[in-house]
Image (cartoon, rainbow, N blue to C red; front, side, top):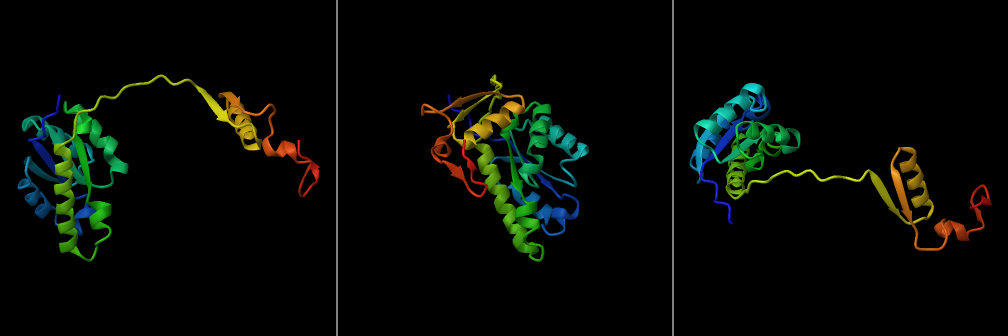
Length: 199
């Protein structure tokens, strides 16, 4: 069964205080987003990641029955989990949320180029909306993990890795294809510079 394309997208443009707003014209980006296909609401926030900002996102999700959300803000690496949780709390599958990084990709790299930074932010928002409209809900599953490690190769590196893991409390399975451990080191008589026995 094919998931229907998102037709009720909400765009939330974050000013991030002055981090974004000092360079990007956030109101122009918000207004532009209103005309992007599939967008039914476009909102500007001072700090979208803050608790009041998240509550506003949740309110709009419910009031406008949004089926996708685009957050135009900072790096997904920083706040993607925050906004996924925000969407889930509002009853929207968290994987129907997309981010457009208009801070690092626009504001911070085009500090003396406000019109160019704003144009780029619009492009990123339009792209994020297009992607969001084609997202499909995902379900997280928990997979049992065996707390053990398999080390392949019984040379010096494999032996040392096995010892380190075992000393850390992990059960280790060391696999070697040859009849004895040691790898190439077992074929050497002495090691430089001490000239000690290699075994």
